[in-house]
Length: 337
Ligand code: PHE
Image (cartoon, rainbow, N blue to C red; front, side, top):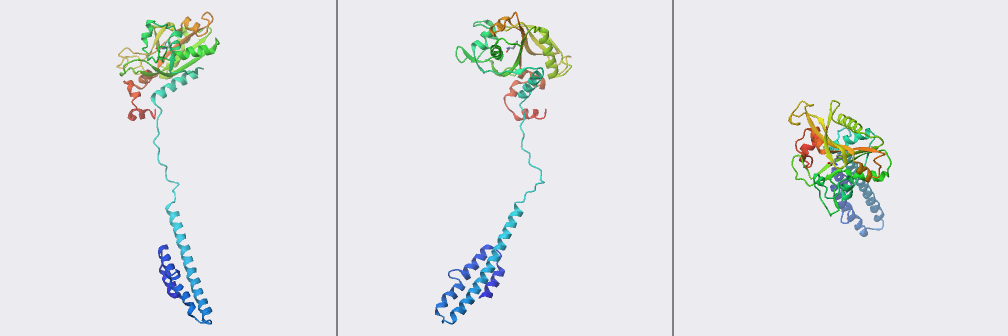
């Protein structure tokens, strides 16, 4: 029996077979168990002898089974190690990378230029009171100039801000008459406009405010020249055209030499060589007063620009809606710029 089992075990080469053999010979109905069970019918002298032999056979078989089992386990471990090996020299898979939105990019660039000139950034609420959005900016109720900025009203007294100028008022009041004030206010603004290639009911502005002793129009002009040259290049020139804003006096509209043709005339600048980029002026004495400053002691300038407009010009884009429709074919072009 022992030789038979050992020979059978020789052939075994997987755990399932091994188990079958174990059951066949050592199990409850196994061949060896039969032998042990038959012991009762043996004589007193035979019993220990046969018992000894049977136990030896059992131990021998068990030892082989044990050894086989270990061998199988070892093989299994090696197989798994092999299979789960990680090749650390393989290059990693690239994750799809996003890109900064062109509007954010332009906004950050503009912010960087002014931070470089010592400005701080001020922010305020997009839902404003009539007082901060209009009244304190010298735009009393029923003033015809309110029509320049058609508004989304929430109640009679609360509206979506139409410009970031209310942040300037809030900043002046918070300063308690102290100078200098030197801030830019970036943020979303809202106007009741029908959306088309050049208009959006919601867009982004950056406005600037400087208040101090002896701040003059030449400071404004120098600041804006420095700004556009950093943004569009050293060759860029500006010109100021008289204009009107209720909160500045005098007021001006600022043009830059065309970023496309450099001023010779092209389609972008409609052959004029100039592109309008922002509004500005000297802070109106009444606005200074309402902000808590004495117009006889201090003066200031302010300017306001649309981020979308600058981005359109800078990248030669002809439809403002491209910024909002989130077409990845459009947006991904700015990933490497
Ligand atoms: N607040 C003006 C606008 O939104 C822009 C502006 C700001 C003009 C400051 C002059 C001075 O149209």
